[in-house]
Length: 114
Image (cartoon, rainbow, N blue to C red; front, side, top):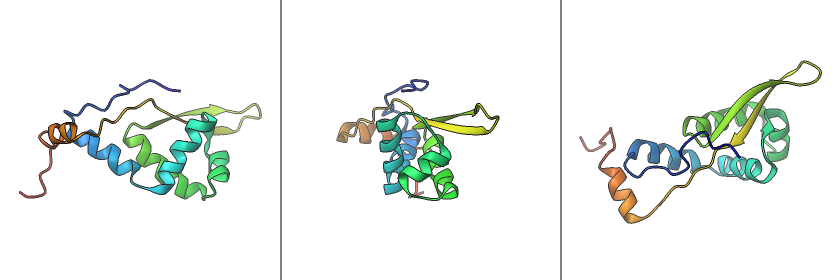
């Protein structure tokens, strides 16, 4: 498992918490996280086959997960010279307590009520 990022989402960073929750609020993205966690890092074509979605749709979901810091990617060459984009889950811990949410809400950079 990759540990490039701080595994705990800081409740003092409301924007990051919101991005993480938004990224996880999709059944395809939950399946992607589950597949990568259960099977380890994988390249896009194989992951698309395992999950049962198209590669373009998978790419869209992986971009959202990567932007939220939940997965990371590396481009590697296979033994036959083919470029393969591998993805893996980053370690993360999202504390969802009322106190954590209240703290995160105070730090949001965008207020929809204003």
